[in-house]
Image 1: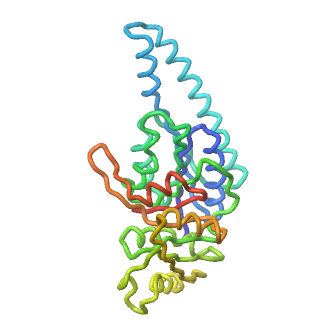
Image 2: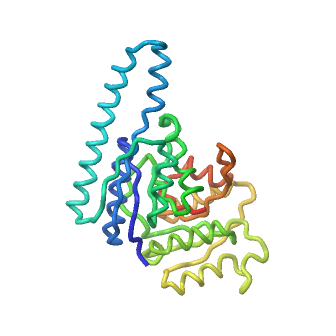
Image 3: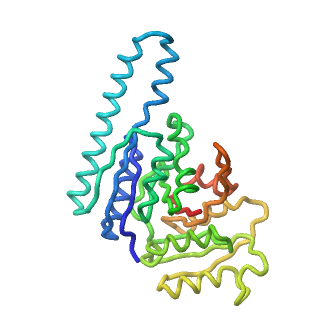
Amino acid sequence: MPYKDILVHLDGTEPCLHRLDLAAALARRHEAHLVGLYILDLVPWIAAIAHSYPGQVEYLDSYAKLRKAALERAAHVEAQFREHLRRDDIQGEWRFLESLPAETVALHARYVDLAIVGQIDHGDQPDGNAARIPEVVLFSSGRPVLVVPYAGRFNSLGENVLVGWKATREAARAVNDALPLLERAKKVTVLTINPKRGDDRETGIPASDIAQHLARHGVAVEAASTVADDISAGDVLLSRAADCGADLLVMGGYGHARVKELMLGGATRQILQQMTLPVLMAH
């Protein structure tokens, strides 16, 4: 079953325009309704201005200038979004809100089949709440999230897919949520890292059960396993993705939410920080 509605988070940066290209291509391929979501969060700027001008009214003029510039950036991105809809003959809608970015993206993601967000560039990290978007959407939206690296251009997605598999709820959810992409892929490799005895009940061959399940869906799939006790799972996945020329990584997103804090699993954190290709995660 194809994706019928896709949400892409846009933020006025150069990487967001690359993300829009990818989202539009997916929407066109699946004949999906595309939602462009732009969120304006001026709270960090207001706090910085108020700190610079304590007890003064000069900050109001500075705030007005910042807001004007921010609205102009949003209008530029909206024009790009609407041009994609027109040029690619895609059904869609533009949403502009003033709110906390992470929670707002997660809320709107609950009403679509797939949410597309950008990797956070920790060398040029966005202010405030926006830096938490990937994690919050992953853990609280209940939907799969496609995270697109901030560096690089990705002209194809889902032709050659690497699935990081282990017999967990999160991995099973990710594979199921990625089925619309896996069914269209030319090649899918399911990789198990350091497989444990008993993970595959029918044959005892690592990843064979999930590979058989995908094959019944018509997926061109092969199973593989590797033992790597001296290297992290994240490094293994990124290395294998590069070796096999994968254009998409599918994996479970691990961790849990605590009060005002998200605790990411080791591999999940590493992939979100070091990804070199788009990654579809589900929790």
